[in-house]
Length: 330
Image (cartoon, rainbow, N blue to C red):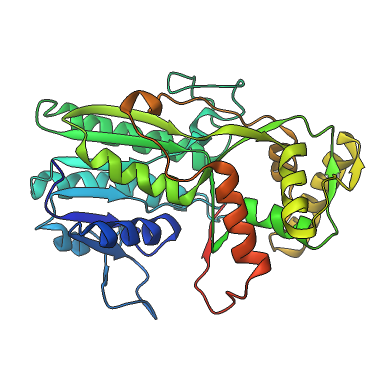
């Protein structure tokens, strides 16, 4: 049975907006909360996970879906990751205790695994390499403690998505697609490395699906299968946009590493982030391939990965949607 009132924290963001659209289509009663409400629809109510007074908004909520996070890799000071991702989770759990909210759905990240072995599943070791992954891991511990206080009555669903893409997103996948669309893209390495990805509509669909989960602790990686390798991804993009089924320029892997470190140096020198960095180059050339036990729940993604990519390419590069909202993510 789906709870009567759902509160989406981070409800004005990329996933939150898509999730709210699904809820509206299904007639699910929900409220959207965000710390940024300027120039946004009136339905989006103010709630900042760092502002304990703002949690009064949750007093009539039965289920919390927390999508709020600091996620970019150029955030300074680094303490902001802890303030929002960890202390914010502490505040959410305090509000859940105060208002007797018994179900929390938390979007974590596969970043907690770091540069993980191929096909790492939910039991994988936590070897995060950045503050985003570290604080997502610590936030999970906060929620687990809350659930363990009353395991028979409290439900915690932790969803660890891989990189999420889709219409209106302005993250790493979009930056890659934009480079290819500009015809100035060059492949580094042999392109056989595989990338686990997640289409936003499918992530939202699984969050909706998980509303029916019973009390207990549920942890799932979210990945849309089958994974693209970089050669297949680039070919699909070029075929959709240009009608060409080839890869274009290719350079050795070491060349990309040099460019990444050079970009790091320049970014530090000018005090501004650049669209390329050593971490992003390593991510691009590495295998970021994960496994998931979601299929055991009976969930079936509504959109195939290939169709999600094609929809995104049409929306971003073949149609005029310049007046539509965009979302900055990683």
